[in-house]
Image (tube, rainbow, N blue to C red; front, side, top):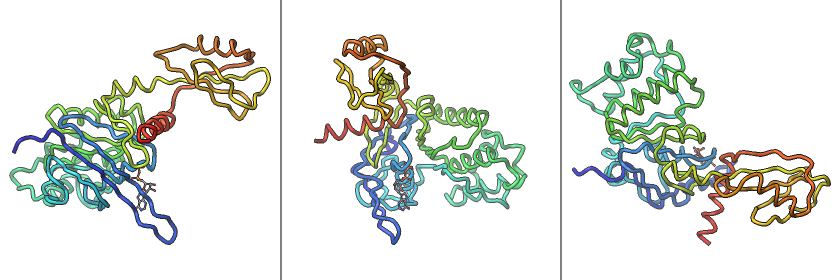
Length: 316
Ligand code: ADP
């Protein structure tokens, strides 16, 4: 079979969780379109509740989609569910360790579930690659949290899938372990494995991913090479406290402004286009006296909001 252009492709994907006695109906995915290029390290970035886990759970078969299509490694999850699932390994958010197995046994059991023939199993190689070789005979319950997490990665790779998905891989993971984990992940990628990771940390995605899709409220609001996306995130804010508190945001030529609760106001500017100097000049030109100023870096939440807003405007 020819290799697919996209490791994963979703079109018009929706998921609505039915209402329960205590919760209303929830549209977690609302027409998600996404194409993850083969060979990439792809980041799925979005705030809590954006729908990232729902998407991953649909891929892994833990959750039924409501409508839309998904292919994994060119295989439709409705038409060839087994083949589609055999093409991915998923490292879940939660550590679900088998306390009474040794790491080696845990890997053998996982390989058995994927019907990997004994001769093709790579348990020892995986344990070594993830720095667990000397723990192969310990019980899993005796491993540290970091070791358990590495074991989860090894378990996801027992059937040698061409796509590895990591759901919030570094939540609660220390710096040293992160490095080890990334080294292994990068090594896999060099060997041709497509890596998909979800995170709500921009820095993490920025560091590792060559492409990033931003998901907000169940839709993709941006999907571009990391460098392009970062250039779009060059908005900064200057917070101005004027001599007298204001009741409305002042109009400044060339800048967006908003009123702060304190009676001060915020001025947004793009680092590529203007400077704090120019912002201050515009404030003075508007006849305002400055008592104090501070600056604020964009947080991801602002970026999500502005991208979502741009997407909604484009739709309208
Ligand atoms: P993320 O992983 O980006 O934080 P999720 O996919 O977990 O987002 O959640 C998307 C939305 O769907 C949230 O509003 C969440 O509360 C809701 N949701 C997730 N799982 C369920 C479920 N099993 N039943 C009902 N609602 C759910």
